[in-house]
Image (tube, rainbow, N blue to C red; front, side, top):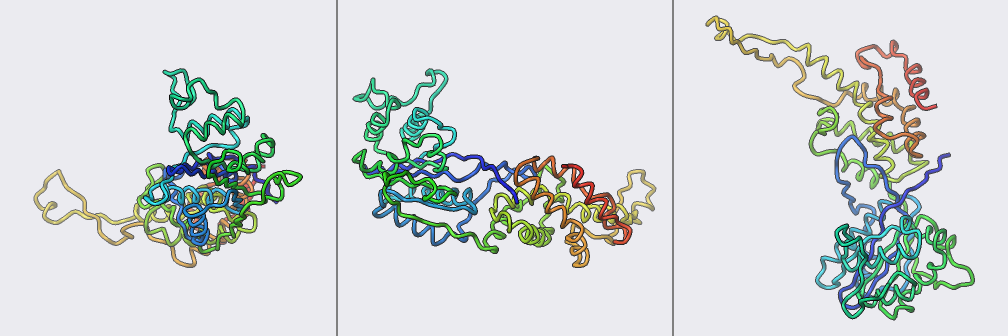
Length: 403
């Protein structure tokens, strides 16, 4: 039903400080726009990945095979973040002594860019404008060598710094540099260094395997889809711990978190047949939540404005002009989640807009912020009886904004 044109994220290069080298190529994550409702760092938890973490950790930290292929068609970006987390843990380990750097198999669209990016990252070299943006030239005994001229020169550069490599979107290598796919899979054999190449992609190995058996068979790891509970737990963890400074402070009020949980369950039930990627669902949720919760906040504002105020007797008797009004605690003191019947009414009214959001935001036909701004519900949504609200007219207006 929907075709998603995935963008690319950086890949990672792994370095073993014990003169052993692990090369990892990971090429299946996408760069997702950070959703505009809250500036929040996405923390990827390991729930649902415990077995994969144990397996990859054991392989890399003990006796890694020369070639590993990781396949995840459902949530490649999340899996990529889990791999980075595993490598980060290993770099901090006193037993393994690994460090890693990141490359991008899409931006590195020719061999020179690929070789330079890898070697610069492994050597911790950052080209600067003041030094002419020069690439890493190797230690003193290698001065004058150019490690980007050929694959052979690149192997000499690897031996000079004794490193390992991770790359993402492995299927792009077959499209842009098919001549490098076999050498990368045989990097350990060709470089005579203890290297493990890990290709990570949302495409199966059979679809990018070089012909005539030129590449060795990899150690294959197939990532199973995340369970519904694991996805919802990950999405709920993105709820800002404090009110957002970008939108109305009450939009992400802590008391609305139970409603947000029910909201996520509805989004998952509607969107999961097409995508169960937590990052994609988070993007859709970020665009729809401000409009979904607006009727609740409108009711809160209406009740708050209708509160009763009084003048304390002590101040009224002294005739002072500087009188302070005290609020009678008759109304709701703060934002509260709606009652069950109101929640059901909201879900019924917004259900069709979830589908519209999926159709527009999953293929990135419009940004989450723009979509959210043009799909707010009408004012006084909950103050009117259900039979007086023209849901069909509002739903049609949502569709007209995009077609």
